[in-house]
Every structure is written in C-alpha cells, then in structure tokens.
Image (cartoon, rainbow, N blue to C red; front, side, top):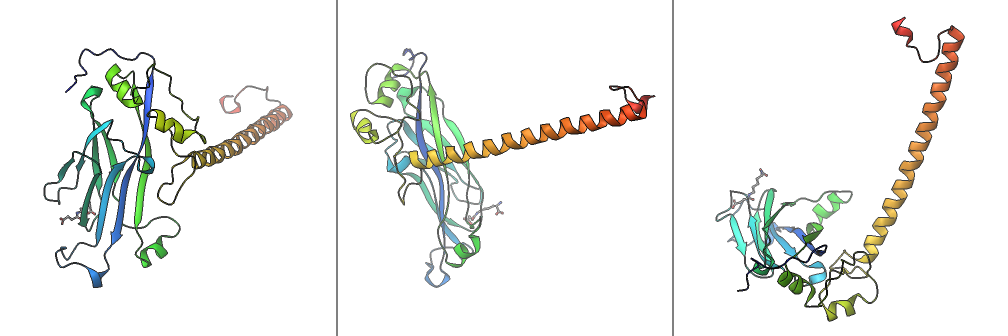
Length: 253
Ligand code: SLL
C-alpha cells in the first residue's frame, strides 16, 4: 500500500470534493409491519454518505463509521465500501456521529460530522406528509477541502490529470460531463433531478436568493441610519431650545 509519509505536498492548492450525507426514514404501516421488527419500533431508516448524483466517492473516501444511539446493539457500525450507509429500525430520533476515513494515500486524519436523524416530518407540509406516511429526508450537501494534498493523493483526486491546477470552483456548465470523463473533478450536475436536488441551477437560485436578501438588509440598514441621523438632529434641536450645549449629557449637569 503506498504510504503518504514523506510524500511532497502540492503547495498552494486546495482540492474540494462535494458529497451528501443524511438520512431517510419511512414510518411503518402497522398492517404490514414484519413480525421480526420490535413492537415499539415505528420507523425504518437509513443514514448515508454518498456522492452527489450517485457519483462514486470511494476514490477518496475509504470507510465511514456511524455511531448510533446506545440503545442499538453494536452501535458503532463501520462500513468499508460503498454504499456507505446503515439501515435500521427504531422509535426515536438522535444524533449520529459520522466519521469519514480517507484513503491511505491521502495521509489525512479522519473527520467527524454529525447528523440529526429525523423520523418525523417538519416544515410547512408536515401534517400531510405524516398522514400519507411519506419518506422523511434530511440531508446536507457538504464539501470536503483537502488543503495542499500530498502528491499521490492529488493524483488520485484529479484522476492523474498532471499539473496541479487551482480549484475551479463555481465554473460549472454544460461541459461538466466531459470534464468528469477526462479526469476527476468536483463539478456538480448542471440541473437537478428527482433523485438529486444539488445542481448548479439550484446553487445559482440560492445565490440569487442570497443576493436579494442582502439587498433587503442593505436597504434596511440605510433606512435605519437615516432614522438615527434624523433623531440626532431632533435631539440637537431640542437641546438647543432648552439651552443645553450640543454634546453634553443633560443628566450630568
Ligand atoms: C429519544 N434521546 O429519547 C432519544 C433517544 C433512541 C432511539 C432515541 C431504539 C433502538 C432499539 C431506538 O429507536 N432508539 O430499541 O433497538 O428520543
């Protein structure tokens, strides 16, 4: 096995890789519940770490350790190959520790994430979702950043594309697929699909929303500043009419 020890680092380069982690939970239909499932268990669920749009991430992710609640037998589950997921049944929500171990060539220390297992619907349509016993999905888009990776890992990450290039963040587009075929890249798909909500289009929409929100906040700040100036002016006028010099605190007289 190649060792990362002693390998040179690719200076000034950060390589990022997107992934998705989270859970899906399905309430049991009491009429169809298997007799093997404990009577107090209300849901089946799955916790996972996966690539965006089903992309294989095992070239950088070696294994994942999921630490479940202590009410579970053998609550530390280590998954050594994709799919990096644990399927279980249960009755309660809890925090799952998700520890990512990287391929040995990386020389990287494991990283820990937390996921709140969600069994119950939340948000505006929670009641309908509950009534229809729909799947409850709670997942996050994440990007892992490898700063100055060692050379063998850089080669692995980029699919041996040769000279180190600075990361091409935010440059997605219609040629993304080609880029992925030529060498490995961190590009996420251009459009979302029913299975994958993370795309350049959703990202751009989110950026637009943030931009709009920012404009609103700036406008609010502007108006607030104007109000403050106006109030200060009025206060100064009042003081002047009372004969108090501007800039003195009347209470201290
Ligand atoms: C709660 N603090 O009270 C949480 C704990 C534990 C979930 C949730 C059962 C496991 C089993 C299970 O669902 N544990 O019985 O095998 O909501």
